[in-house]
Image (cartoon, rainbow, N blue to C red):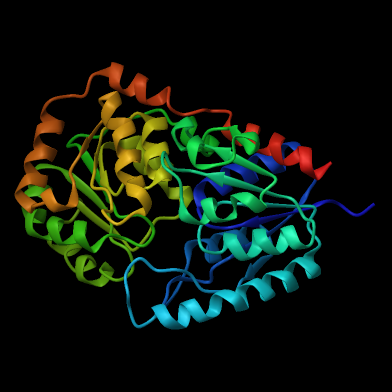
Length: 359
């Protein structure tokens, strides 16, 4: 008998990896992946998912489509013109792969795949990672069979009868981290897989003072990598630079870090909460419905994080906030409160939800 196939539509890689772990522990399903080959439009740099998913032995398929952009660039018009093409390409992929269920993790690839699945009577389960709600997931919610939520705060944005509170899946190796902070303290600065030039500019102005006091691991993204990599030789043993870090490398960094400085993407926030490491979040101001601000406020309310809005960010303010946190230890109660926000069985719950439609 042919094994059942689950088609995962990439949008957010890290929760998908947690779900893949759970699927492989508890089922015999085949998995295929639809994702993006390049990290950004106009930049021929392979996306992290394009590098990692094939290494897991999972077939990777690129969907040729476009997306709505929040800011007008020279790529906006060509991207909009590709949106209808994406729908027909999605139909072709689904007819070829014949999945029993589609599991979507949001992003611009989700609408063509979920809507094409609805046309072909293939049920879709979509997962919302944020404390708010993403545009793609709100768009496809009428066509989805079920909507898995990470936080109850996003529930009003979706049809009540379809929603299930599962939590945001976090990989087991993150959940099992035993913190072992270093001396001098280690700061992990990250703008996510694509990096943050805003954060990088602020760090550049205070870098010498930072590494004089602390050790720093800096995930810059591809665009700024060379500029910062050249600085490593000036600060041997105190400063390490990466364009991006593979998911397998993140647990070791979080285990040793005394502080995380970065954007407030849903999955960064979830992993920081799961480990209980203090953080400074600088939310992207143009994120959908202020979702990053809402993500950051979850840990700010728990006492584990400080939030610096981008319009407030200056190099000196960032440095003084770092010094303040590292010289005034965060209470253990804050870490415990943050960890309670993480549903450790989220991956299991999401796989169980998908199983209902697989069967």
